[in-house]
Image 1: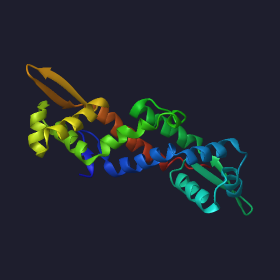
Image 2: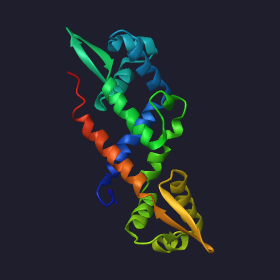
Image 3: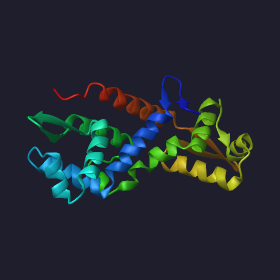
Image 4: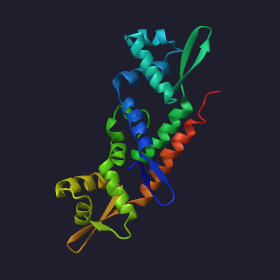
Length: 208
């Protein structure tokens, strides 16, 4: 399954994997210090940065390349030198997106690296199967119905439904002796639209 299909919007799992990679990179200690150095240093060059970071030029350049590709930073050329800047517009767009996932900001990610866990849950192939099954179902489903649909062990089914409930992607309601599960369409639609908008914005976040 490559796409989570909702009624009026779809969510690309490839985009979610790209987003997870970016969010994980934002929690890396070296990357945090590198971005802070660009923000605090006045128009640093690659040499300024690898000397500040006490790292090799090749490794620093590799990290800079990753963040350039994701539009988190950009450079301007002054003669033979490239001077780096934080792309404030793109960082704000990432801030806005992260709030959809868990009320985190770009600064809070340094303290709370678990914020990208929800992205991992949404893009996991098994939890995606559960979500699509619940989205397509006309009525709420029991855990037994989910288990039988995918021929999973009860413990695995319980874990996956538990993960989805923890992030409010699935709701549960007890009726008599059974618990019935439904996809939280409002939350999923909000995430899908926000991720799609984030990657559309990348096309227009070029620094002039």
